[in-house]
Length: 158
Image (cartoon, rainbow, N blue to C red; front, side, top):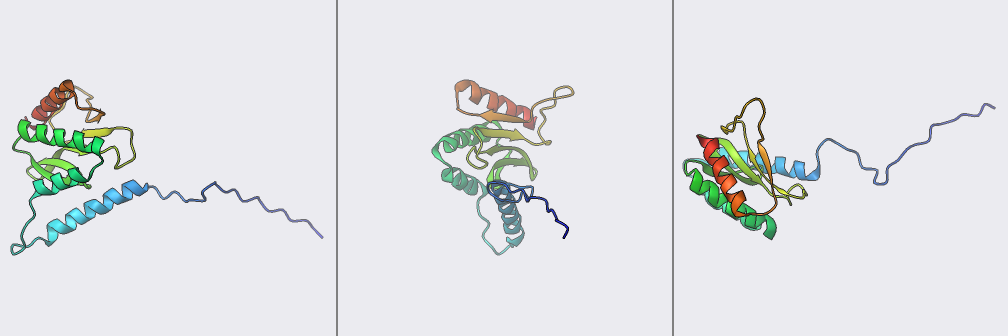
Protein backbone atom coordinates (compact mmCIF):
# COMPACT_ATOMS: atom_id res chain seq x y z
CA UNK A 1 0.00 0.00 0.00
CA UNK A 2 1.35 3.35 -1.00
CA UNK A 3 1.55 5.98 1.69
CA UNK A 4 -0.14 9.22 0.72
CA UNK A 5 0.96 12.47 2.07
CA UNK A 6 -1.16 15.52 2.40
CA UNK A 7 0.04 19.00 3.00
CA UNK A 8 -0.47 20.24 6.49
CA UNK A 9 -3.12 22.91 6.66
CA UNK A 10 -1.80 26.20 7.89
CA UNK A 11 -4.06 28.23 10.07
CA UNK A 12 -3.82 31.58 11.70
CA UNK A 13 -4.58 32.28 15.31
CA UNK A 14 -7.89 33.88 14.38
CA UNK A 15 -8.72 31.97 11.16
CA UNK A 16 -10.13 35.24 9.81
CA UNK A 17 -10.19 35.84 6.11
CA UNK A 18 -8.98 39.23 4.90
CA UNK A 19 -11.46 40.68 2.44
CA UNK A 20 -9.77 44.01 1.74
CA UNK A 21 -11.57 46.34 4.12
CA UNK A 22 -11.45 46.73 7.88
CA UNK A 23 -14.63 46.86 9.93
CA UNK A 24 -14.09 50.61 10.35
CA UNK A 25 -13.73 51.13 6.58
CA UNK A 26 -16.87 49.10 5.90
CA UNK A 27 -18.72 51.17 8.51
CA UNK A 28 -17.60 54.43 6.85
CA UNK A 29 -18.75 53.18 3.45
CA UNK A 30 -22.13 52.21 4.88
CA UNK A 31 -22.47 55.67 6.43
CA UNK A 32 -21.62 57.28 3.08
CA UNK A 33 -24.20 55.10 1.31
CA UNK A 34 -26.80 56.13 3.89
CA UNK A 35 -25.88 59.81 3.39
CA UNK A 36 -26.40 59.44 -0.37
CA UNK A 37 -29.70 57.59 0.09
CA UNK A 38 -30.95 60.27 2.49
CA UNK A 39 -30.04 63.02 0.03
CA UNK A 40 -31.85 61.17 -2.78
CA UNK A 41 -34.98 60.49 -0.71
CA UNK A 42 -35.44 64.10 0.32
CA UNK A 43 -38.30 65.35 -1.75
CA UNK A 44 -39.66 68.84 -2.00
CA UNK A 45 -42.38 67.89 0.49
CA UNK A 46 -39.99 66.42 3.03
CA UNK A 47 -38.43 68.68 5.58
CA UNK A 48 -34.73 68.81 4.82
CA UNK A 49 -32.50 68.40 7.84
CA UNK A 50 -30.04 71.18 8.55
CA UNK A 51 -26.60 69.91 7.47
CA UNK A 52 -24.84 71.97 10.14
CA UNK A 53 -27.04 70.39 12.82
CA UNK A 54 -26.15 66.95 11.45
CA UNK A 55 -22.43 67.79 11.61
CA UNK A 56 -22.72 69.16 15.16
CA UNK A 57 -24.65 66.07 16.24
CA UNK A 58 -21.94 63.81 14.78
CA UNK A 59 -19.27 65.84 16.57
CA UNK A 60 -21.22 65.55 19.85
CA UNK A 61 -21.13 61.72 19.51
CA UNK A 62 -17.32 61.63 19.38
CA UNK A 63 -15.15 60.70 22.36
CA UNK A 64 -14.03 63.78 24.30
CA UNK A 65 -10.53 64.10 22.82
CA UNK A 66 -11.83 63.95 19.24
CA UNK A 67 -14.87 66.08 20.07
CA UNK A 68 -12.73 68.94 21.41
CA UNK A 69 -10.61 68.94 18.25
CA UNK A 70 -13.60 68.63 15.92
CA UNK A 71 -15.46 71.49 17.63
CA UNK A 72 -12.45 73.80 17.21
CA UNK A 73 -11.88 72.73 13.60
CA UNK A 74 -15.57 73.38 12.89
CA UNK A 75 -15.41 76.85 14.44
CA UNK A 76 -12.19 77.73 12.59
CA UNK A 77 -13.48 76.53 9.21
CA UNK A 78 -16.81 78.35 9.63
CA UNK A 79 -14.99 81.61 10.55
CA UNK A 80 -12.21 81.34 7.94
CA UNK A 81 -14.42 80.25 5.04
CA UNK A 82 -18.11 80.97 5.63
CA UNK A 83 -18.78 80.01 2.00
CA UNK A 84 -18.03 76.37 2.83
CA UNK A 85 -21.14 74.39 3.66
CA UNK A 86 -20.88 71.82 6.47
CA UNK A 87 -21.99 68.30 5.61
CA UNK A 88 -21.39 64.71 6.63
CA UNK A 89 -18.98 62.77 4.44
CA UNK A 90 -18.35 59.11 5.25
CA UNK A 91 -19.91 59.86 8.63
CA UNK A 92 -17.40 62.60 9.45
CA UNK A 93 -17.64 66.42 9.43
CA UNK A 94 -16.73 67.91 6.05
CA UNK A 95 -16.98 71.30 4.39
CA UNK A 96 -17.98 71.73 0.77
CA UNK A 97 -18.01 74.42 -1.89
CA UNK A 98 -20.55 74.04 -4.68
CA UNK A 99 -21.36 70.56 -3.38
CA UNK A 100 -17.76 69.32 -3.54
CA UNK A 101 -15.85 68.55 -0.34
CA UNK A 102 -12.86 70.84 0.19
CA UNK A 103 -11.79 69.73 3.67
CA UNK A 104 -12.81 67.22 6.31
CA UNK A 105 -12.11 66.08 9.86
CA UNK A 106 -11.55 62.43 10.68
CA UNK A 107 -11.64 61.37 14.31
CA UNK A 108 -8.90 59.13 15.67
CA UNK A 109 -11.48 56.80 17.18
CA UNK A 110 -13.25 56.21 13.85
CA UNK A 111 -10.36 54.22 12.40
CA UNK A 112 -8.64 53.36 15.68
CA UNK A 113 -5.77 55.68 14.81
CA UNK A 114 -3.44 57.40 17.24
CA UNK A 115 -4.35 60.85 15.92
CA UNK A 116 -7.22 62.74 14.34
CA UNK A 117 -6.79 64.00 10.78
CA UNK A 118 -7.59 67.23 8.99
CA UNK A 119 -7.68 66.46 5.29
CA UNK A 120 -8.14 68.37 2.07
CA UNK A 121 -9.51 67.09 -1.23
CA UNK A 122 -8.26 67.89 -4.71
CA UNK A 123 -10.77 70.77 -4.71
CA UNK A 124 -8.57 72.62 -2.21
CA UNK A 125 -6.14 75.14 -3.67
CA UNK A 126 -3.11 73.99 -1.69
CA UNK A 127 -0.88 73.43 -4.71
CA UNK A 128 2.74 74.22 -3.96
CA UNK A 129 5.16 73.03 -6.63
CA UNK A 130 5.25 69.39 -7.62
CA UNK A 131 4.31 67.99 -4.19
CA UNK A 132 2.33 69.23 -1.16
CA UNK A 133 0.54 67.75 1.86
CA UNK A 134 -3.20 67.17 1.77
CA UNK A 135 -3.62 65.54 5.18
CA UNK A 136 -2.47 66.66 8.60
CA UNK A 137 -2.26 64.74 11.88
CA UNK A 138 -3.93 66.62 14.71
CA UNK A 139 -3.22 65.61 18.31
CA UNK A 140 -4.01 68.79 20.23
CA UNK A 141 -5.36 72.24 19.54
CA UNK A 142 -2.72 74.85 20.25
CA UNK A 143 -2.73 78.50 19.14
CA UNK A 144 -0.15 77.58 16.49
CA UNK A 145 -2.33 74.70 15.23
CA UNK A 146 -5.38 76.98 15.11
CA UNK A 147 -3.44 79.58 13.10
CA UNK A 148 -2.18 76.90 10.70
CA UNK A 149 -5.68 75.48 10.18
CA UNK A 150 -7.06 78.97 9.57
CA UNK A 151 -4.33 79.68 6.98
CA UNK A 152 -4.80 76.32 5.24
CA UNK A 153 -8.57 76.72 5.01
CA UNK A 154 -8.26 80.27 3.66
CA UNK A 155 -5.74 79.07 1.07
CA UNK A 156 -7.91 76.08 0.18
CA UNK A 157 -10.86 78.27 -0.81
CA UNK A 158 -8.86 81.04 -2.47
